[in-house]
Image 1 (cartoon, helix red, strand yellow):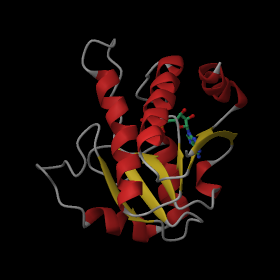
Image 2 (tube, helix red, strand yellow):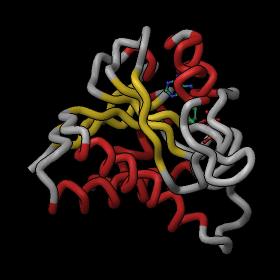
Image 3 (tube, helix red, strand yellow):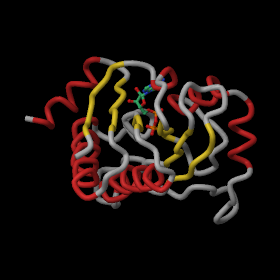
Image 4 (cartoon, helix red, strand yellow):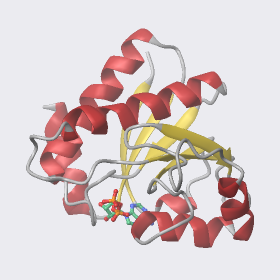
Length: 173
Ligand code: ADP
């Protein structure tokens, strides 16, 4: 069965098959990890994102879904863009949509026969999702995926600080 690894660091530095971007629905860049990924990947990334079909005006990737592009100047071969939910108290389907981000990103990785994938803590920045609950969803959704699928073989949770990593370590006990 595939393995889960918790790391602390900058996701843009990881030489994996795919890094996941906590994007927004327009997919044309933004702040936080999205901005860092676009800066490190170079202008070609935004050009590739523009080629992704809009499902409705201004929306290339609805919340909870995922899209894939090359990684261009990144050490990662691909970027899987997903859009996490904005936290608004937990009663608006946030948990289901956050689980959808992990599941749909893992599915895209498997379809592209990718072995290693790294996730940031989707929605836990400006989208304000409680970090403990977000880590629980990340770990449980990934464990379930790995139980039933052979790819990817290695899933990294790339945390931006030791304190963030603790939320993931607490899940495995
Ligand atoms: P969202 O809009 O989904 O909340 P953010 O980018 O604001 O996305 O934050 C998501 C998480 O990514 C936060 O926990 C933030 O600390 C983390 N983060 C920001 N930059 C990086 C980076 N370069 N590598 C890994 N994680 C990062």
